Image 1: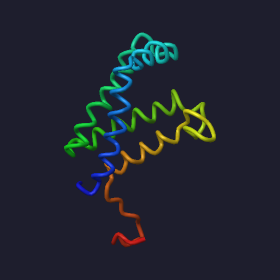
Image 2: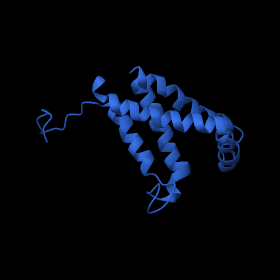
Image 3: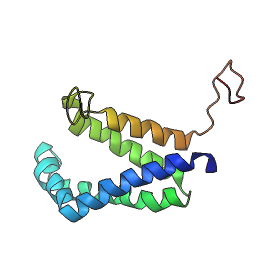
Image 4: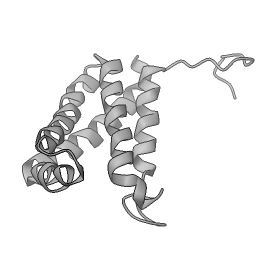
Length: 132
């Protein structure tokens, strides 16, 4: 699995920044109490918000040491799909540019984590020799 070193490094930096900053700023509490609770997750919105951030945070060292990649990938894919559905979908595609807070970043992260689950995908009818 050493072939995906740069992908794991990039994902770990993104997850580290996304989790640590919102934990220390208190945004994770606001997200749980003021957003998730108000869209129907009360009284567990705060716990769900913390679960998301802790999954992101725990994923970081696992990505660094190249362990438990499939469960980490699945957990994060579920989080990003739910993020698209509950948070980003109504904002459209673009994170910046043609809009704000859209789904494009989540879609990219989902496919990056799929690459950790399925690093060697064979396309039927094509030789898998690394050439295009």
